[in-house]
Length: 115
Image 1 (spheres, rainbow, N blue to C red):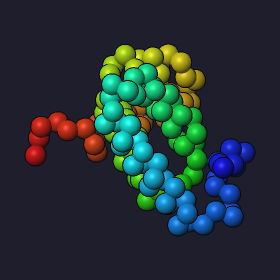
Image 2 (cartoon, rainbow, N blue to C red):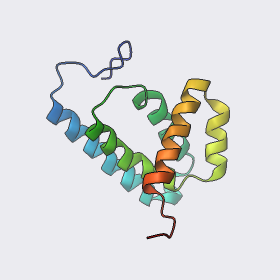
Image 3 (tube, rainbow, N blue to C red):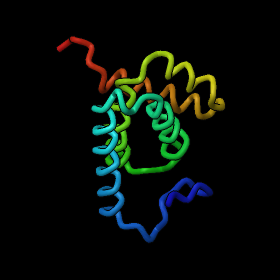
Image 4 (spheres, rainbow, N blue to C red):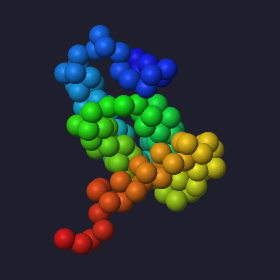
């Protein structure tokens, strides 16, 4: 469970168990992304949950990268209306986190056709 008061993971969790959990979640995101017809509007909620729960947390770079691998797959099949909807529904600080996440997605993940 994430301790929202300090935005840090509880001390009793080992680094390896957290890494294993995040890795499983990233794979789950990947599996969900492959089921575009079934996921439907859930993609909005998955991105929202990431921005709300994970973005404010202080995680090591390696752990954030694992999360990004999964959430970028979800963002990859979000359309413009999903992102517009999210921008309209979230507060200013979350909007900044969403913009940063989307910028990272464009910079590091999205295929642009350039090699």
